[in-house]
Amino acid sequence: MSASTARQCRIAIIGTGSAGLAAHAAARRHTDSLLLIEGGEYGTTCARSGCMPSKLLIAAADARHQVETAAAFGIRTGPSTVDGAAVMHRVRSLRDRFVGGVEKIVAGLPEQQRMRGHARFIAPYRLQVGDVEVEAERIVIATGSTPFVLPPFDTLGERLLTSDSVFDMVDLPASVAVIGGGVIGLELGQALHRLGVRVRLFERGDRLGPRGDAHVEKIATELLAASLPSVLGVVPELGDVDDEGVRLDWLGTDGERGSERFDRVLVATGRRPNVSGLDLASSGLALDARGVPLFDRTTLRCGDSRVFIAGDVNAERPLLHEATAEGRIAGANAALYPEFRAHRRSTALAIAFTDPQFATIGVQPDDPAFAALVAGEVSFEDQGRSRVIDRNAGIGRLYGDPADGKLRGAQLIGPQAEHLAHLLAWVIERELTVNEVLDLPFYHPVVEEGLRTALKDLRRAMHRGAGPRRDCLECGPGT
Ligand SMILES: Cc1cc2nc3c(=O)[nH]c(=O)nc-3n(C[C@H](O)[C@H](O)[C@H](O)COP(=O)(O)OP(=O)(O)OC[C@H]3O[C@@H](n4cnc5c(N)ncnc54)[C@H](O)[C@@H]3O)c2cc1C
Image (cartoon, rainbow, N blue to C red; front, side):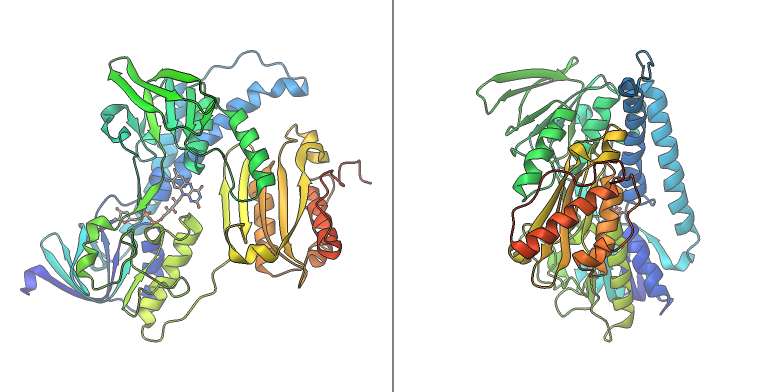
């Protein structure tokens, strides 16, 4: 290697997203021989096209919805109008502010530890970045994920929207078809609908919301499908695409044919780990069927190599707080190698910012450990505080282990689920029993009292093997 085209370092980190930045911060405690490589834009997916701009759009939609539903409280507002350009201006300017904050952090890192360019493996522990060959003793892969656009929608050109492009719009379109009823499709579809865009969401499955618990699935699907025009069990066919827009045709599960024209098609058919550009075949790592290196979730080490993998690219828990936690583990372990540590992973927690919000916490029905658990339940339909604020819809199901009395998991769809989910995640993380949680204070009247109802129901189910009770025990005025 000639000096002008070669660099050596102890740790190369590929990707300057949330996972890569966390890996850099953790590794930096042990060494300065670091190289943080970025092939795209600085700013992270979270700030640029993920968590933050999506919540900005949803905040605008919530504001409109509050106005539109104020009549339930006797407040007359008259018809509201949406200034689409002003909505998107706020989304983009605050998004840019969040991105700017990350860019400032990156700019503050030592220059010799930063490198621009797309990295790919040319041999184990050797990367090509532009015309520079990087030799690293250890490598952290933190390359994130990219929206997967289901064919034939990838042919739509300017009519196509994904989460990468939707927040760049300068105005709201008149109509949008949303393909995919996962969290991103639901969050964005519902927000656009509430902002006055004509929206229809298509989901090829027959359910919306959390999966695996039939009680929650039924109610979540009903509530979410009622919140925006949805067609379930269908992938629409692509019709004419012309100056008038995009025509979609479909045959519903009821045998009814449908056809509708849209300005834009927002495709939210999942995300794929960014592995294809890495030439992992040259890395010497064993790969799974998707081409993702096999790795240990407690150490994030790939096989018995000196390569670690963190964030969305490993596709294990593609969420922001997991990406930063994994980045910290991978960065520290890369630095400490061969003395690296296995880390206990925190309680799983995922929240969708739909209305009603839904959340999954801890052990879920697709986990083998779920078979030993029993459930307790609350309906938010008659929950006191939920009714006061006119948000009385939804269900919470809590799962506990009768063998040790511990709370282990939950699914929620209902009011303030983002906050309830945190309380549940925290007590599950602390391994509290249902009785210990019930000994904690519950104020009145609050939505959290609904959790107490479900906990009491769960305690009964644990002790007696009784079926869940559906009515709310915390509905009265302080009884
Ligand atoms: C619309 C949307 C909403 C979301 N909402 C939430 C939410 O509310 N809550 C939540 O917890 N999570 C949410 N997420 C998920 C969250 O944004 C991601 O889990 C998180 O941003 C992943 O971080 P990361 O570091 O793994 O990837 P990224 O931030 O994408 O970083 C990867 C970096 O690697 C770079 N890169 C890729 N390949 C190479 C290469 N070969 N060489 C050099 N550089 C490369 C990329 O350019 C990128 O900068 C949302 C995601 C989306 C899309």
